[in-house]
Length: 152
Image (spheres, rainbow, N blue to C red):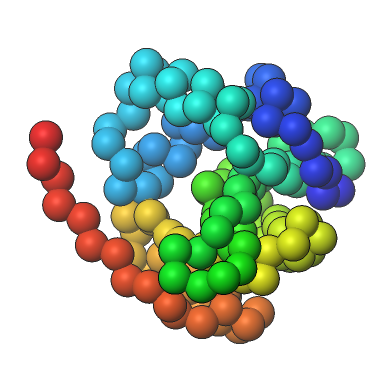
């Protein structure tokens, strides 16, 4: 089941810290520190995000996605920007990721977005490539390449 939720509903789930920790460990984000995760979750609660949670039939969280709507810096339309998408490892070979992205697409369109931007911060090159390939198969194009350099 895919469920649209408020930030409070999504972040209040017992799995919220586990999800945040998993995102830090799987991505290029700084090493996991509980204080950073708590701060990130607090910003998400007060921010402009929309949350989608994938639940199993017994109510177990399988994955979660978040996005926000904002103006494109160069164009004259609204864009849905993905905050994050996270699927628990045991569900990564299922349709959970695809269902989360499809619901994000549908909801963003309902909210008036003309485009959906999704990125990847996965430090596992094979997983990042598989994610990109899946996105391209469902109609996304590779639009932006980001580079990063640690300054502190």
